[in-house]
Amino acid sequence: MQGTDFQEDPATLGIDPAKLLALLDRAKQEVDEGLLPSCQIAIARNGKLVAFETFGDATNDSLYCIFSSTKGITSAAAWLLIQDGSLDVTRKVAEIVPEFANNGKQNITIEQLFTHTSGFPHAPFRPTDWNEMARRLERYSKWRLNWEPGSRFEYHATSSMWVIAEIIERIADQPFSSFVRERIALPLNLPDMWVGCPVDQHHRITEVMHVGDPLTSEEYAKLGIPEPPVTEVTEGALTAFNNADIRLVGVPGGGGVMSATEIALFYQGLFGNTHSGEKFWSQETLDTVLRVRTGSMVDQLTDIPVNRALGVSIAGDENRNFRGFGHLNSPLAFGHAGAGGQIGWMDPQTGISLGYCTNGHDRNKVRQGRRSVSISNRAAQCAL
Image (cartoon, rainbow, N blue to C red; front, side):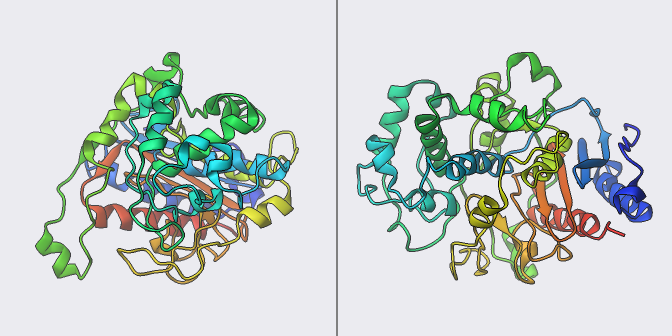
C-alpha cells in the first residue's frame, strides 16, 4: 500500500475530506478482502489531482491496461480533427478508407462507428494486424455485416475503433499512437499516458489476471438478471494484453496503458483544466461531441437506452448505473468504463473526474458492476 498522494489540500478544491477518505476506503475493500491483487484510484477537480493512491501488489509508479476506457481517449483524438474541420462525422467511412466498402459496408457513416450502430460488432481483427498495412486493408475488406447499419445498437468492443484510428491516421498523416502522444498526452502533461506503450515502460505494467468465480446460470436466474452473452472479450483476449507485442500496438478500443492519475486528469484537460491553462477542446466542440446521438436505441441485455455520444456514454437518467456511472452522478457526467471494472468519467456539474484501475478482473460480473457503482457514488458526492 502506498501513502495517499494529496497533491492539494482537499478542502481548498471543494472536496470533503471525510467523504474522500470514505472513497479511498471503498476502493481498497476488495484488496483487503483478498479478491483483487491491486487497484489504483485518482480523483481530480479544477484541474488538480486531489488524491492518488495504490493498494495491494503495486505502487504509485505502476501502470494499468485500462481496456475500453481507452475509447474516451481515442474519441477525444478524433474530436480534435472534428474541431479543426478536417473530419465530418456525417461522411461515409468508405470515402476516407475505400478498402472498407466491401460486403455492404459502403454506406456506413463515421458517426455510426462512434455510436456502435455500424452493424459489424464481431468483426475479427488481431491486434498485431495493425502493424502491416496490407493485412489491415484485407481485414477491412473481408468484414461482413451482422445487421443493417443504423438499425440498432450493439457494442463494438474493438472493431469500430480500429477504423476510427485508421481515419485519424489518414487525415492527420501520422501514426495513431503518435497522434495521441503528441496531441493529447504531452500537451496535457500526462507523460504516463500511452496508447502503444514502449518496451522500456513494460516493467511498470501490472499483469492482468482473473479472480473469483463466475455466477452460474441458476444464480443469474435467481437474481432476475439476464446472463451476459459470450463475446470477443474472453479471458484469453484480456490476458493477451500481458504480451509485449500487443502492448506495443496500442489497441484503440482497449489497449491504453496508464495510471489512474492520467485518466482523471485527461478528463480535466478536456475542459481546459490543465497545468498550462490552455484549452485544447473548445466548449463548442464539447457541446457537439457530447450530444446523445442514439435516440431511443437500447442495450440488448438490459433493454435500457444506451445514451451514446461520439465515442463516450452520457450518464443521463436514473439508469445511469447501467452506463458506467454511479446513481449519484449528475445526468451530465460522461466517460467510458473498461473491462475488469476500470472507471473513467468526468461530471461537469461538480467538476469532479475519476480514474480507477485494477489488474484483477472479477469473474463475478454482478459483484464487479456493484463495485464500480459504489466507487463512483462515493466519488460523485465528494464535493463540499
